[in-house]
Length: 260
Image 1 (cartoon, rainbow, N blue to C red):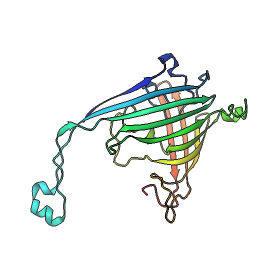
Image 2 (cartoon, rainbow, N blue to C red; image 1 turned 30 degrees about the horizontal axis):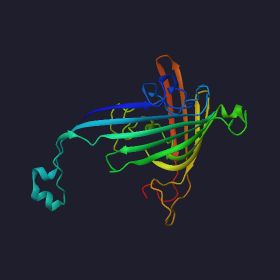
Image 3 (cartoon, one colour; image 1 turned 45 degrees about the vertical axis):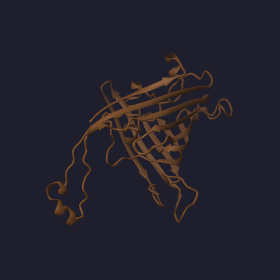
Image 4 (cartoon, rainbow, N blue to C red; image 1 turned 90 degrees about the vertical axis):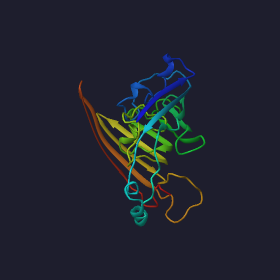
């Protein structure tokens, strides 16, 4: 399988491209970056960045099963006939990314899937508000504490495990060396709130979601039960050539899971 992809940016010159605070840059500088870093980008006023991703895959796969060897036996066993796969391009995928710096330490992200393989229309994948400073409430408020904390609230990926940082996100295949995702894909978008703590290479996260992927207002028994999750990391660049990152995560879903 062959694929090509690229990231695009607009509205601001490259000199201003980095002036979004506490953000995983959506180009090669974002490789091997997990949680958005606590960087020291100076706040110079409100900024809005419009960007995008595009991916085009050429597929060449073959598949066989019992039907190809003995159709009568396959029918008796209830084995379905497989589609006759050929060689062609998959439907191209595209993302629209909006990032806004509202205030010092306060930013917003929104991603829209303009084209995807499982939807015929554009749809919002998700978004969140991220808080790394409380200066928008009162200058210097809890500044020492906020040097170690990041607060996120929205309906988007929850920070469970590390695989979601390396997976393809529709057209954003840039951070995934294998382009496609695993059969068991540790990924979900849920309504959530989470607090991330970082100090001396130790990363600890506590969050809670409503436990649902597809949001709805008509609910049954055990729908929308609070679903807590957590994460504990150690991430340290020990030498110029060796980085150690160990991650453990847990997710507790007491109600109907996010397949509903």
